[in-house]
Image (cartoon, rainbow, N blue to C red):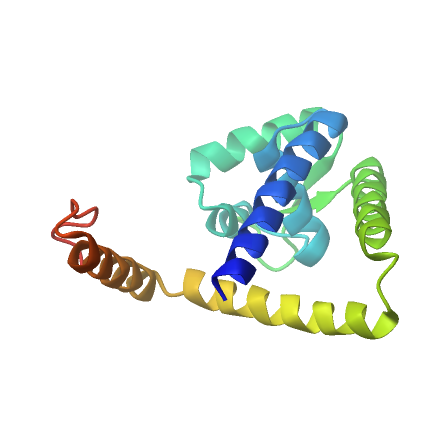
Length: 171
């Protein structure tokens, strides 16, 4: 299992590197790419929903949206049900860029698994779906995440004879 966890971690690191390269190719930052992805996946979104999803403050999202709007990738429109709010949507150019980026990603993944049998690709997809679900569940439970870290640190301290406590006082 540890070897599998190491390989999943390697994929995550490679995906982060890929995301940085794609952001540079699109002429935006990594956070902007994440925002564009969220809007493409579930948009249009309110700025407050985008802030929550990205873990950013309202002023940070406002600046991010200003940059994306200036680049012609998103547009802010009055919310049809709440006149005090706006919705952020991709522009035609923004949508085209995201579709092209997702297609490139799909082609790169397909090239990596081209030699595998369709059954293995299906099984891998199911396994990765399970891993993604488990990681999302852990990420969605902040108290459980901190508790898990504390338990792991306690195990390490017991096995190594007293390493420093990273989360002293938390729980």
